[in-house]
Length: 230
Image 1: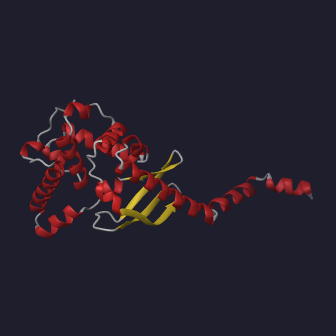
Image 2 (image 1 turned 90 degrees about the vertical axis):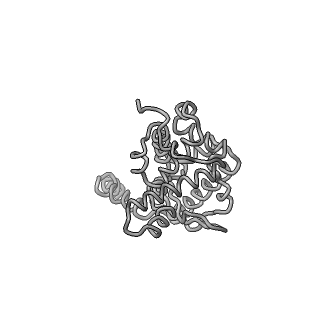
């Protein structure tokens, strides 16, 4: 009898069947534990942002988010007005904010992770509103998670995405960077049926936000790249 069971368990179909059951029905406690891990990572990132601890914040954002930072940096240094206007609104705002706030020589010297750390260390992120948010429901699907945002005031994002990398849940801003924004919705509402009018209004609103954050005026020169693309 023992030999019979050894024979069955050593057969490939049985082994694959057992593995399939293990992956198809993970223990519920594991899912709850992963959701708690997402919340812990978010709270660590929130604390790092509010306390201007850039290196810790950079450690808790995903590879995709770091790639977005690299793209924003490239656009800030070299992007023409046409290139910038072709970007989603959040990416446009990020690139122009970097162009306005950081000198080109300094910006050139900052690879993605260092750039994230720098903007957090110097509070260029203007992350005061982060203090009033928390996570509600968290849904985990293998190596990605989505979490509802709870806010005690007005906050433009209703959901955040996370990716599990190197054993840590890290914030992934890809959807935010390429998603619809309040600026887009306002531009469509005020210039219905006019793509050119919507683009012009979007540009004005983005520049107004940058000026408000910087505390200085912003003129048309911001559309000119500081450097020629190598």
